[in-house]
Image (cartoon, rainbow, N blue to C red):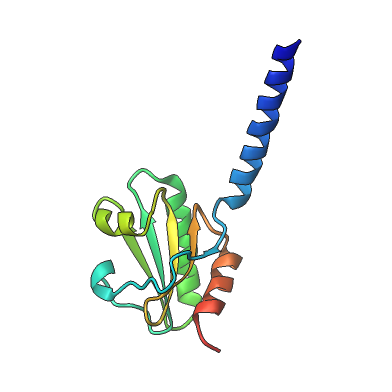
Length: 138
């Protein structure tokens, strides 16, 4: 009988972990490291006049393609916002410094390169637009 209770307990824990992972996937969060900034030389491209959407991607990442479309669409909608796509293999040192552990990882930078928001996984378009509202001064 105790084996059944153990199995039930493990099932509940796995279900809770699955729900947490599903909720956290793609959610825009505040960047934990205060004062983290990226420069144009680090990302290999000029920063946007208002904000920059940086996407870390990999060759075999299916959600990366959908994320790329979302970020390009948002960058096209908002003047002064630029989308930069970085391959993790080419920018491995930067990815390690920023603790990028999965792709896609999206960083929202303000005009000075400060990381305002971060998402691991495919973010929703509305969340990206909301994060830009925080990065672009009114």
